[in-house]
Length: 371
Image (tube, rainbow, N blue to C red; front, top):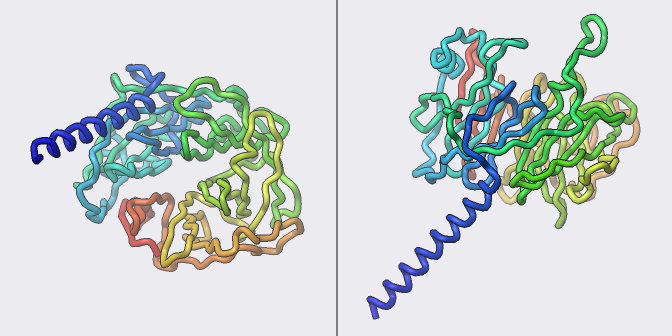
């Protein structure tokens, strides 16, 4: 009987390995081995089986990279790396003031931190991908002979300066402003070359064909008007009732919900503005989490600190369609001791990893208990 039970157990174990292998093969379908070339590295997001999505706004493309980083974390040891920008500068042969950290993503399997980095500033900046393990030592992720696939955006803005004087900008650099993965699709926010330039996309993964995006319009209460050209700055996925939504934050700081089911190529949709969180502010990063049976949004901002935003009765939230002096809709509290936070991502069920500014231009990477 023991031998029979052992045989059954081994068969079940082998079948489990087979299924895991099949899943891994599914997610790397269409990938090729090679050296992916980047013009820039910005937003990061993890998909299944250690697949890391890296936004290259300069090239208006997304790279999916099979990192092979699939060993589960043994524990949730707190992470704290002081002067991470100095350590990365030493790796890349630069001074700390020439290092820009563009985004942070935590691998949900290994809990290693990944950073998209620019060495230098301006048109000559060189992109690099950095990994920080539990020991706190950063390392450059080699992109030689990796498995990867690429999705180019077919309707990105031209790579050229527009405007006049000090109001000039290159809209190509906002072709991708944030990304996120949910249920086999990569969601992309940014600008397109359409009249309604603000765009959301839902691209099936593994990548095959990439169609045009969904043009989005919102009412911006603090500006007192409808807008179609302002890009989403950061977003997260959120279920309202039984339906998946994107909750998207814009500069100055409207929070808008979009049903995922409406994100179809070539469509034009109008989002529902459910909060105005304060003007003269740029949202930087956002996550969703649960605490004591309630669900919250945690948003880092340029000038209003880290907001803990309630989602109670979000399904009953009224649409904001009139001018707002400062704040309206969903309420929030500012996490007073979380100063200088530029980026954040979930570490485990109870902690978040933040990238925060310190004295002397230094940046620290550390895990903190969810508030």
